[in-house]
Length: 162
Image (tube, rainbow, N blue to C red; front, side, top):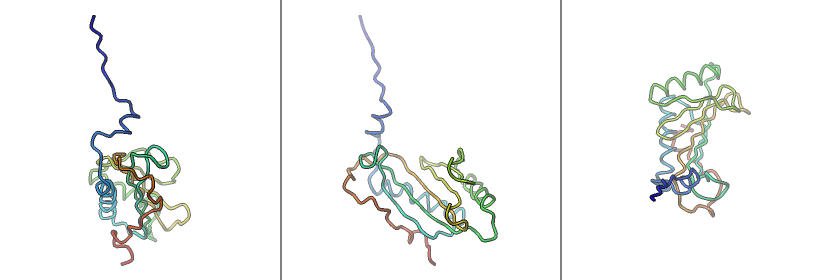
C-alpha cells in the first residue's frame, strides 16, 4: 500500500520563513522608493517623513516589514475628498491598483503595487494636511529585536523644507 501525503506550507510557516528574504537595505528601498514615486506622481508637498522596520508577527520578532509614515500639505483651495480622489486616479494611471477604503479614515484610499500597500487620507488632527502610509512585504528575517523602535526621519529624501 502506498500513501502519498502532500506537504503544504502553512501560512504561519511562510510568514516565519519567506521564500526570498530581503536585506535591511532592500526592505527600506521597497517602501521608500514607492513613497518617492507617489510623491512625484501626485505632486505631494511633503512636510515630514519617517521610516520604521516593524514586526509582522508581534512587537519584536521577525519577520519584519518596512513602513513609511509621510505627511503632506493639502492644497488650500482643494477639498480633501476631491484632492485624494485625483491623487488616486493619477496613481492608478501609473499602475497602482485601488483597493477597499480604509475603515478608520474619512476620504481615505488604499492602493497597492509591487507588493507594497499605500494608504492615503486626510490627517485627523490637521485638516490642512494629509497622511501617506506605506507597508512593504514581510520578508526581512534579520534579528532586529534589540533595535530602537523609533521612527527614523527621512524627510530630507523627499525635498521637504525647500
